[in-house]
Amino acid sequence: MIDSFINYLEYEKRSSAHTVLAYRKDLEQAQEFVQLSFSIEDLSQCTHPDLRAWIIDLVEQGMSQTTVNRKLATLRSYYKFLMRSKIILKDPTYKLKSLKTPKKLPEFLQETTIESVLEEEVYAPTFDGQRDRMVLEFLYLTGVRLSELTALKWKDIQLFDEQVKVLGKRQKERIIPLTKSLISHIADYKKVVEAHFNYVEGEDYFIRSNKGEKAYSMLIYRIVKQYLDLFAQNSKRSPHLLRHTFATHLLNKGADLNAVKDLLGHANLAATQVYTHNSMEKLKAVFEQAHPKA
Image (cartoon, rainbow, N blue to C red; front, side, top):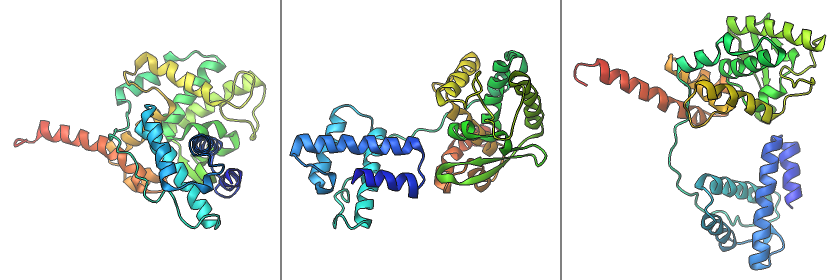
């Protein structure tokens, strides 16, 4: 039944390859545990105590609360699928409770830091250097996800209309406006790409390796970390940090929460509201500094 669920994720829900892989891994781990511990051959035969024993085992292994909760979410999705398919009559995850996790505010870069990161002098005039600069600038000025950036093609960049068409999670398309400065830098970057590869076509990937192949995730991670290491003091230096920075800076400047939600491609406001905490901290600091009665 695991294969049927995975097919459902891939072809009906259109989940990302990363999500599908994570779900399969979680379910196979659970299957292995109940088979070794209780001689249960199929997860559909599990009861609440069987699954609870697996969760306890994960905790005793020292696994983080976040990871355990993610695996629990996988189980819930799987058994919901089995219920809908009428494979089971009772959901064994019904009484399983998520572990309490400490609330963490998303980290972000200060404006002065991002200005230093994007300084033109930091990057070599070669294809590598200009591509690297475009990676950091595009992530910060559009807030796109890593997977969205690597999937982007030149035909999606609409310079005349000052916008980019992005295909997000679950194949949802959204339009993100481009700033005047980014449009100018994209035009300059295109010239560098044309000189390096002798041509640029609409179907070509926007960000490519030296050999012209689609940029892989680890390449983007390395590029971002390399330049953030020069200026940023944050504990995390990943592409997602630039997405956090994009959202936080917009809200700090008074952007509408719903507008930021749409720009980020969030399904609901709850995912976007986490960034308001950072904005509130800034407002509190201003209040305490400026108000005579603070």
